[in-house]
Image (cartoon, rainbow, N blue to C red; front, side):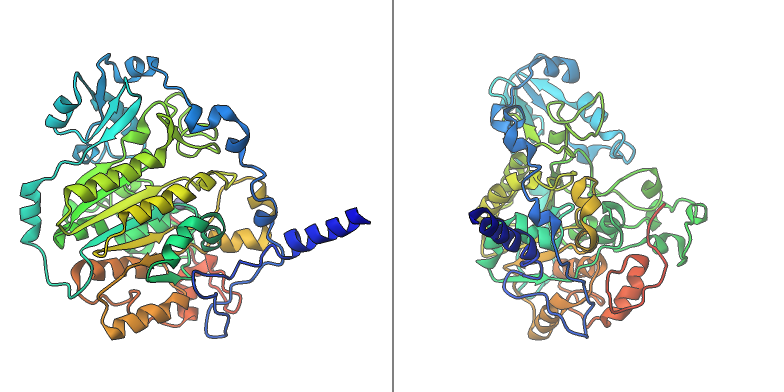
Length: 494
Ligand SMILES: [Zn+2]
């Protein structure tokens, strides 16, 4: 009898209530009315039901960062030095080819340099240095006074918009997952003056198209100049001249007089696959202070097998580096950047790859440290925006059996803001209205341009946007709105 009651309780609690929080937001719910895109609410949420079953890092001591041993033989083998300090090269100085995904890790190794002292490495202009004896990475961002003066000349009056922006990009996290897996981080937002965009819609189920839209405000149609339902690999135009290449939001922030920073826990430049194809059409503009080299360290990055499931920045285990989760070093770098430019207008992009893996559990280890980081970074003059590109798109049982839940999550990432100041009352009212509206990374990109320049940008989060049906039509084949007919065109880049 007791077993039956217990079983019934578990069933009701675990299964029937599994989607209970699916429509919940930071301080309001997903509004469900005819005027908005109807996102189907799943009946059961497998991802919640089997939550933590696949948290392999919890079971195996060997993959816990606290117990990870530093293999000193790797220093000689990969960095070819026996000096105590090894400085990572400044990747911002790499040319376009060396900044591509396939060449970056090897170039980082080749251009790392051994030093006898930390001071000597700093004095030579390096920012991120392995202290092999203490088995850690030490970051120090050196203020560039000349750069500060140059940027000051470009600055415009931006009304009362904040001085700084901290932009946290968490790859592969749906809006629902953010609430379920990052409760401490959500608490940070709840405690701030916050906003949440419920219907950010991914264009595709992977980083590339969404990253391209976020960073450049462009889709493949903007390269080819046509909209088609077919694959059109052959139809792309010849490479653009440098002048015609699309400039990224990082370049835009520079033009508006900001000091820019970028750090990530993936050995990759600028958010999405920077490869030969994109090199023909976009500028892979580095931030003034860029730190992506740390995670190319052979203790994390597997130089023999490449990117894989059990090792490196897409691993199903915690991504450890010198006894810590790799994101700890990105947080440290961001803090150093803010310290170096304390009084200056700046933007820092922090890229976190912890959800990018097949179990959806590595992110458990990110929540508390991320919340702690955001709290530590809190300043009145700093706006924080956290966002993602798409939901959990990688394999594994959750994707295989997740049904409606997974499909909708894949296409429903999020934008959350904290401490956004200085919008006039009209723009503020639009910004608030748009929280429930169907949007893409294009409106987000345009909003960031507004935030950087103080100049109104149409088709942005402060604009009167077209109704959701029109937006669904723009999104094409992947549009998840149940109440609209979707057309069959795709923005996928082949
Ligand atoms: Zn992604």
